[in-house]
Every structure is written in C-alpha cells, then in structure tokens.
Length: 147
Image (cartoon, rainbow, N blue to C red; front, side, top):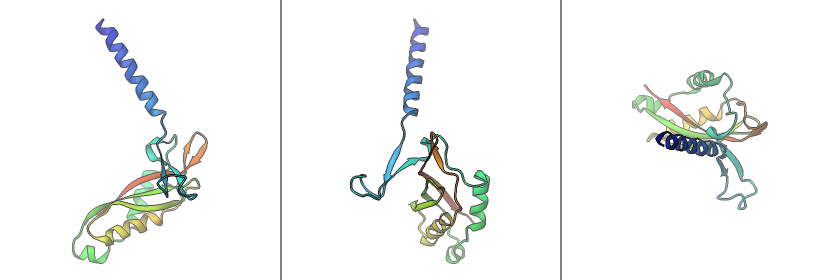
C-alpha cells in the first residue's frame, strides 16, 4: 500500500514536471500588449528555449571579452567605488545584441553606463532556437566592477 502511494506520487510529480517543461516562457518587448504596438516583439526567456544563445568562444570567451573591453571609470576608480551591474539584453534571430537595459545598477551611474557600453559592443552571438527556428532571447548578465 505504501509502495503504491509512493509510486503514484512519484508518477504525478514527474508528469507535472514534464508538462511544466513543455511551457514556453515568452514575453512581449516594446509594448504592454502586442495589439498596442506593431513594433512589439515576442522574446523568449533564456532558460526556456531548446538551444540557448551562445557568445563566440562560449562562457570563457564572454569573460575574456568583458575583461578586455571593460574600462573602469576614472572617478569611480579614484573614489574606490565597486559594484555589480545587472543588465538584460536581447539576442536577436541574427545574433545581434539589442535592447540593452539595466535591471539593477550601482549608485555610481558611470559604472552603469560602462556596463551598457560593454554589452552594446559585443559581437554577434549564435542565436537561440526553438526547434529549428531562430528566436529572440532575453539574456540577463551581471557586469562586476571590483578593485
């Protein structure tokens, strides 16, 4: 009896997880609803695509790019300001980076601007895919400023 209950509970949980994995998480960027603006774009969340977008050279290449491109703003360096800027951007169907935004910035606006500049200068990524179709994907990336 107990084994049967455990088996049924396990089966139910597995079916719930499987059905939740089938849900595509899509947000609309550019308007409150697609009907309000013809420029609204459906964007997939990073964790909910079949193939996630990838920076050229992978994660190691991304870290190297950030470290080579990032320039510590003079006044922030002089005043020993540190922090982490959490940014979001969209990797388009062609791999281009667009819609760079600050989700959570630092008190020093120069660090926020520098993080946005670094992301804006990124080369094309390999696009994310759902099935065999390239789709726009929102990526969230922290840029750290440490002395």
